[in-house]
Image 1: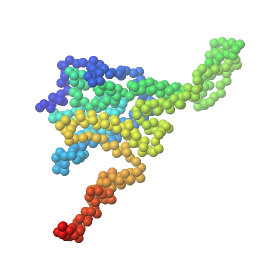
Image 2 (image 1 turned 90 degrees about the horizontal axis):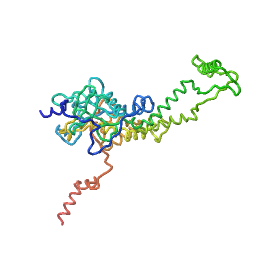
Image 3 (image 1 turned 60 degrees about the vertical axis):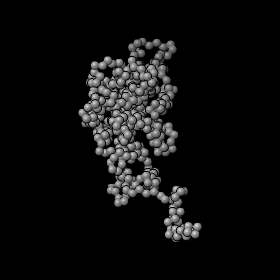
Image 4 (image 1 turned 45 degrees about the horizontal axis):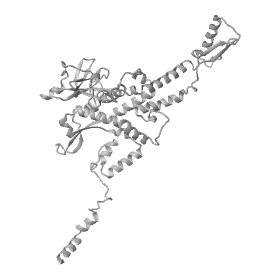
Length: 427
């Protein structure tokens, strides 16, 4: 069968290969950027703001169901109404268990973390001989290398020494200048994150040393001391400053006669340590597109939590959801299925509001036939469906101008019909 050739992993085993660096995108030209940076993801995740942004985005996406839909009519044939396809294998793979090692929540979270921290997230589509998807396997982004072979894209696994056709790999790119290889946010935020990391290190070292300052013990002018006396004075000074290790703090330091202490470092206030740490929160959030208030910063522009959540959904999460939906759809579904299938995230989990707002929301949709009684009860986790609850209702106060109910009543009135008949006969 011809379809089997699509899923052969060693299709290009003996074909001459060219590395990614040697290939020039015919559309984007020679746009390239170096992915090498002295700042690592391990260091970045030690920053509380980076950890919060990565965890927030990945958890938000992992909590959303990724729903496969099928367009069909009531008889089951291809139609124009969208139904959730619970019977398809894709629903269980995307929302319950993509493979035997992890749940769908863990799978989606790790995929997004790889995309944000490493620039690329790779998923291997494991199919049987008939082309049916059996498993979705998350690959280690550190070992996967995109290569151009005969003007075609191939993914090479440097760890397992295997080549995968582009139809076998779901590839999520974080930021890319060529559409082939993604770059981590940390690559671009290295300078800002480096400053943030150094600020945290300075704070840690400052308090680790008992919040004491470095300085010089020097003799007063005209006083000379020998080496032994200077060493003893230094040891006594250090022991007094570190006395908190023995259960005491704020000890009084007594200097030998003829010695004075002169600090040689600036204070945290002079270094504006607290202000710089607050600025780092906003700057890191700017790179990840997360509202600072959601990273527990005091800076905020929203008057309500609902407004903040909507802004977060529209500006931070939605672009990532579109990217994931499109890549999964075009790789999982065959081209012959594109016209009657769809794949969308259900974002209702991110739009949860207070009880009054939800009640007003459901009421308005019920009045225009958007929700039935049982559909609302299902959203509210009602214990059972009610009889007649599947009927949709609409308010009748608004009428079309070309079919007013009053005019229709007059036309259908028997007395009016008789009068009209008499008028016609007289004419």
